Image (cartoon, rainbow, N blue to C red; front, side):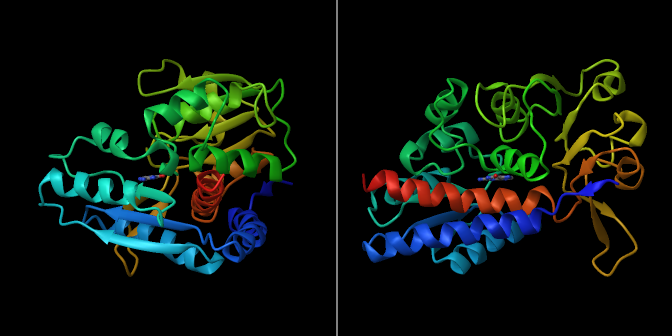
Length: 291
Ligand code: GUN
């Protein structure tokens, strides 16, 4: 029987565990706070940010919500980040990506105080992760490690294949999978849009992480019998529904679940975990800033 990995349930248990830590911080007068900065009118980004704020409220993290007009000067965003960096009552800062084309995203990530960079995207935090000394693990790959663990799958010595090489998911995922640490020690291959014979590679995976952002690109024939399949894709495709679209992953779920040993659904797999690990990093940031 294929195990359907319930991301909502695993995320809920992580939030439940965090509440105790948050209560202790609040008792010490150190309520964690997360500032989200949105410089976009993209409906998906708006939804993600509002879900992150709801999560904060649920567990007792103060959510600070900052909207910047997407047509504003980049300077407005940098000034906002500078103010948040200087504000002792702000523990975590998240600038929702993507930012408008006239704003240079790498400079934005460098502008955030690395101690408050709860996404783990600042080059200092990326460097620490690669060096095996992570301060804040990026939320999606960290959440995926927790999902794999929740399915009772040990990554050690296994063949892991990551499809996608983004800075947010693919690269940090591969880094975590090769580390000498629980959730790591896997023999890891990273595939991308120029990979030849992709199916040959993916069929070799005991653990397959699909994070290319291409709707349903991985089907059952590309999956090894019994593999653990993690679908990071959240693609809006036109559909005859009330909203005019539906969400599909990078994995063709129906054929994949016939072959996989365990698989994450979309929605309800990786998405809730990304948000839960953001809360985790915000609580960690608060602790580190009061050390
Ligand atoms: N855009 C898509 N995913 C993410 C994420 O994890 N963090 C931020 N800041 N922006 C994103």
